Image 1 (cartoon, protein in one colour):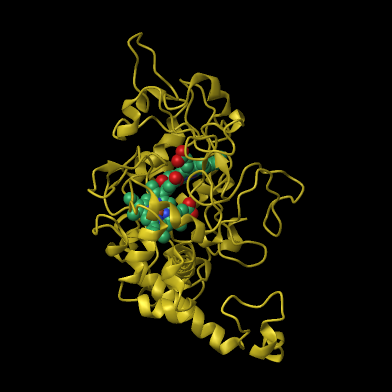
Image 2 (cartoon, rainbow, N blue to C red; image 1 turned 135 degrees about the vertical axis):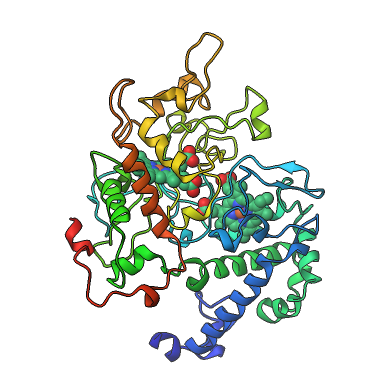
Length: 421
Ligand code: HEC
Ligand code: HEC
């Protein structure tokens, strides 16, 4: 901040290689005002249906703020396109807390977190279920142009629609008068605005869940929720913590409930997704078909990014293909995928259960067998039915909007995080 103020002379900016794109190097106050203005424009864009070819679809149509910026309904996919008749192929992810996602890397080493820095965690990070873009500003171009989403014909069409929007004058003020004559730059500006909006903590990462309040010692968890937390963290039962990080970081940060790692959990094929009517079509996540650069890395086929579980109780379809519609099912799948596969997968004409029916046989070696998986039929599941329902109760404490003032406890409860080591 000090450096900015000292070198703030606009006249110097032109000679400086790191000069900001709008041509000057303002002191902190104006820079903050600019961020606020961009956030406000980004918010308007996020809810603006006129940015789509149909005129009736905005980002918020699929990413509903009342559902953690995830899908408003229980359908696994949402119809888009100019006539809203073109189906998507994947469940809409929630967007809360996603700003913390690291950029994609095939070899991820944990830095200041609980892990051992020398351990290669494998593919991690990036945005979408297959991590194929890193920045929300680049991500935004996907739905704006995708034929089955907002379906703009070209960048020029996006720019023309934005030029007619109520916030067009503000865009010219922020990015220059000639912005709309340069469609690519206009799309970049839209991306920047949407990204900035999605990074606003008050709407996208407020940390106002009951669990956050409990970590801050402002409230108690019920006995059921506490049992759920213990089962969630217990390496011999849920072991959920392995991928869905639930503890404060050593640096004092609140947990994100994901390590953004890629894993093949073997979700059953969802025949409610129209693309799956074609028996030769498989959504293989990291190795395609949406993502292209890792098509040859068949050891990654079937892997999808672990989503955060914050606000997961606001969803009504779960996993990348929206196969499950209740949290109970989404959790019970971990308990009995291997002990009772017939509960999750269809039975073929030969009477055999078609386990992992959404992954061609040659890739099934990629399936994850860490606990709670890897029990044989006939063995007891790693989690009891009680554990499953306790974990579901715990997951419901991860929804933002809890008001500890109403339920505050006078003294710190003995069940604070230090007791759960
Ligand atoms: C038709 C429904 C639909 C619309 C409209 C839509 N999205 Fe999405 N969004 C999705 C789906 C589905 C995915 C997952 C895509 C994938 O994995 O390939 C996604 C993924 C994302 C992600 C990545 C989340 C993560 O961290 O993994 C972001 C960010 C996002 N959308 C933002 C937006 C923005 C901004 C807009 C408006 C410009 C928008 N979306 C419009 C359906 C939609
Ligand atoms: C080895 C890593 C790993 C472990 C352990 C793990 N998960 Fe997951 N979880 C994932 C991945 C990856 C996905 C997404 C899979 C997909 O869509 O195909 C996921 C998805 C989910 C979802 C769906 C979320 C959504 O937005 O659709 C829930 C709920 C969930 N996990 C809960 C749990 C619980 C509860 C446990 C412990 C019983 C657990 N997970 C253990 C990696 C893991």
